[in-house]
Amino acid sequence: MTIRILPSLLAADLARLGEEIDRAARSGADGLHLDVMDGHFVPNLSFSPATAALCRRRLAAGLELNAHLMMTNPERYAERFAEAGADTVQFHLELRDALNVRALAADLHARKARVGLALNPETPAEAAFPYLDCADELLCMTVHPGYGGQAFIADVLPKVRALRERAPALDIMVDGGVNAETAALAAEAGANAFVAGSFLFAQEDLAAAVAGLRARCAEAFARAWGR
Image 1 (cartoon, rainbow, N blue to C red):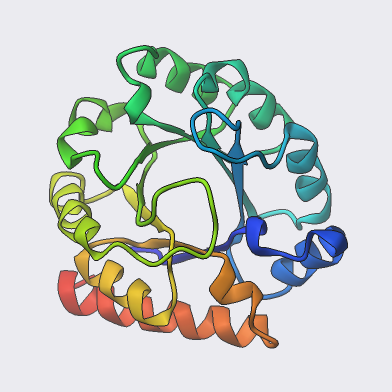
Image 2 (cartoon, rainbow, N blue to C red; image 1 turned 135 degrees about the vertical axis):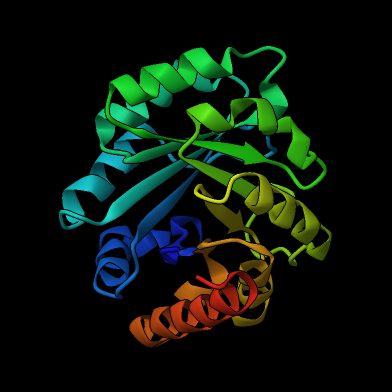
């Protein structure tokens, strides 16, 4: 299973946004994670499709741009983020009663974007089971979404394991409170993709931090899952 490391731009120095994007792009990470907040689904505001377009212009070909839409109405903006250059667009399954998950997934696939289905800490793994066939990845939030710098919620780990057992071929991502220790725990539970903001952007040597995180996660995943 490929291990993916994505720094979260939310933790970057936004006064030096272009430089921070370039620093992440040179770090050996697999791309960038963009936390998009609407002030309604979560109590905060952040990036727009224009930010996604800026990231795409500065990222080299082959580096992923991952847009996590923490929004009440992702269907209004998902296509705009895909058109702005997001390779993967993630939206939340807490909205599934008011949102046609399959229709939005089909629209994103038609625009050559990968589809990520996100679950808040309290949302059970079973919420994703009916939609595994239209997803490219699953995102397990390991903090309550809306703000960076929160502590990792270890109670999410059994959900990660349940999803890996049910969907052995899908990418499973964790986001929130990720550092070298918590990422290894998540990898052992079955995660293979890791969003880290505060931990990575605080490092003077971002490349060394990315390499160390990747190695530790690869070892933990292989030990637990044999691949």
